[in-house]
Amino acid sequence: MHFRFSIFLSLIRSLFPRWDFFDQIAFSFVVYYKMPTDSEWKTLAFTQSHKSSRLVFNQAANDTLMQSSVVEQFARDIQELENNTPNFSKSDIEQLTTYQLLCSLLQVKLKHKNLLNTEFQFKITAQNTIEQIDIYTSDKLPLVNI
Image (cartoon, rainbow, N blue to C red; front, top):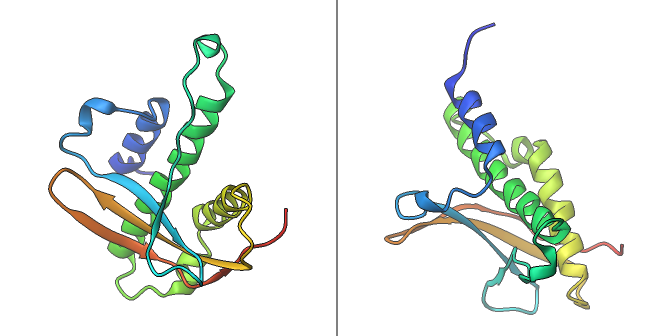
């Protein structure tokens, strides 16, 4: 077994899911979604309200950090797949655990918006203060009842 620095950094970063001081130089990942009736992409926010009563136990913040971590890990998995498998296909992406987690997460978040559509599409972008890069755009996916 050999030491892989990228895995070590991922593990260290998982201990600190939000490193705000890196926002100036690093990319942040944004999720967009689109329904069949929409002509433009809409941002799907992973935010929660701040309340002073949640200073000690903040389940909503933990949930938001988990959701953001799923998006970040999926983006890392895509980049790793590009580096290790130059001719990868959509089925390779669909077999990723993070893809399946992200699809489930997005279905739940979109169903909470009480949308009447039966399918959706999502896009992940990496952006910093200078540029925005599309990392992945999904095919149309079913919006299942939860």
